[in-house]
Length: 59
Image (cartoon, rainbow, N blue to C red):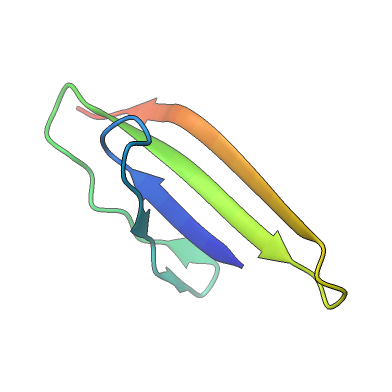
């Protein structure tokens, strides 16, 4: 599984580290937002990508 986040509306993506089931994201300055993307792949090569644009605003 790969988790990524964007602080510019999805123009660029950064890898988010995952540890003990939690994702670490460096939030942008107040007034921005964070978009999230999860990519998974099974043993047969099937792939799924889920993107949530503007998943949450920052304060």
